[in-house]
Image 1 (spheres, one colour):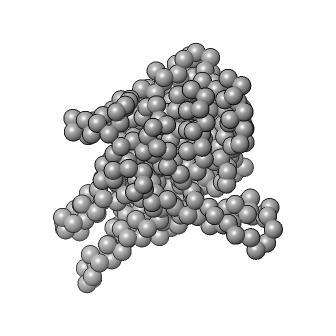
Image 2: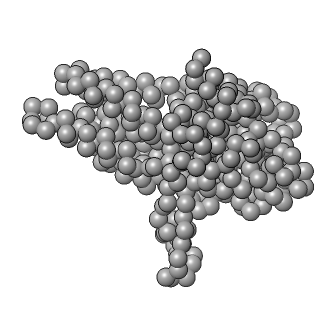
Image 3: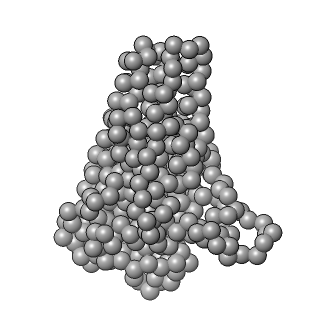
Length: 346
């Protein structure tokens, strides 16, 4: 059974306990979040990360803000809108954050009585959390059917329980296939610049006793050419209506390599990651993060001073390189635009 000795986020009634993912794998430290600004900072600093978990964290952040507002004072509704705006501004790419904000905002706009609204917002945040846990379980089950005995699966970044609060998306599929009794091996990209693969995915696979080898990002093509990769399975941060998908930087390169070597390339994500308001990946906003994430590792500078740095956190994989998208409602195959629309209209 999946290792459940760690929980990335937990609602405590008037505060939230999170596992600080920036300290892993060296420290398993939990933080108590009691203010929406603390949650916004945790999202910004990647103490909580992964699209589904970001959505859950955003919902809880708004709930925390709502609980602290004095509704007897003037401008209380403006203050609540400030809470929403602060949470919304934390990460621009992950669709799940905006999905959660929109759901919480819909409740706020109803202008319920303060006590009712507080409880309704808390209940909605808890519901979003429960939904993401269930979605990851179903994604893992559907995706396990794509894995055959003795497969070697290459994955990128971190998409396990740490990123989703449940089984995971891409890593959840791997975990489920392993516990279904399939023999497999995993190639884990280190995932520069923040090393989510070597720090987090390796940590989760080790906890679940799943065989894996850590490789640098630039080694993927070598192993593909050697015939040592059967499939690539990765997560997603935002999926456009046509199937174009944003994910951690380096994913696009993997998709091109997989296509060149005839290797299936799968995205795994809940439907909460699909953004039906954008037609293609050209409309996805790509987050640019601080230069220090490239120039430094754990506070130690590894580059010369005074150099120019570009640090896009994500790239977009065109749908032409995608074999299928695994969701909690089943596996979406080509033609993506038509089949995604059918899924949402059913």
